[in-house]
Length: 202
Length: 171
Image 1: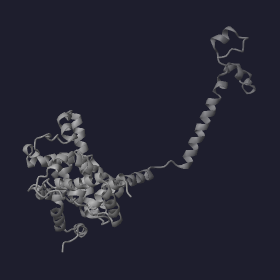
Image 2 (image 1 turned 180 degrees about the vertical axis):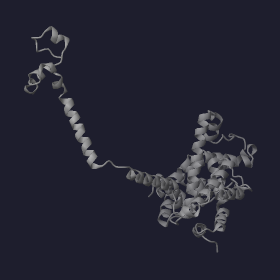
Image 3 (image 1 turned 30 degrees about the vertical axis):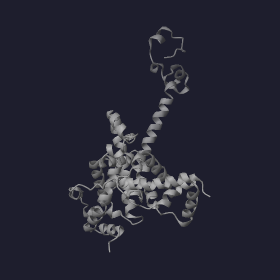
């Protein structure tokens, strides 16, 4: 039987360093993935993930299990990611290098259209890149909602607590986000990469 | 029956099977009659498959080691820090106490000498207040008290020498 996150964190609070290692092993990949999809830079994502774990470690003595551990963990991660995105945006504005980066940020590139088959123009890597760009072009809050819903499979209550909004507001947010992605990724939806694809679950 | 706008709010929860039975029934009733929402629901399912194509990013090999290094570099709390969790606050309080003690220990002026100082200041003020009268020779010459003083005591100025009868000149 696996020990719960809360119990592990209480053990860390009591001075058990091995429990912290267990939490680290359990959440480093989901956290790095979440942060990478947020900031779209692997080095920054790793630095931020380290910072999240460091903050958890620093706060271990004050930890009280009032909420789910993952809610706390991903709220720290979300705040750090949003701050990093904003800092990065400020730096780019100051250095006046906005032209190429803005183009990259604003929307995914146009896919080839017309009579040409999509798989003639796009390798699998390009498809992934296109999907990442589409997610990255979502407004920040919508992006967080989609990542936590689709990739972390969190329930609505937990995501709502991380985003500090109501469940009802979250449902609207998710609908708008998926609707945008449905339009942006329409060429990929029309031509699935793998046979049998099309019965996806979040 | 639900309208399209109302369904849109519940559609995601319906598709990911997190809607409750009442919500499911409402959405299903709507999907039976609304072709566009039905098509959208099918596309959402396909979209979720597309989103799964993005591979998982694994942390780099040095991730754990770097984190342990950073944790090891964290300043350790010493035993006395359990009693003083906020060093800046503790320093401020200590400084405040020290200042209070210092101020309390400063020599205080005695009450008797304080009274004498007040009296002296009062005398000085009255003298200044009457200075104009004392400097007015005309008034002084009419004073009954000063009339008994021999004339030699009166001030000898050039003006008085030239006009001996005119006693109204002021200094």
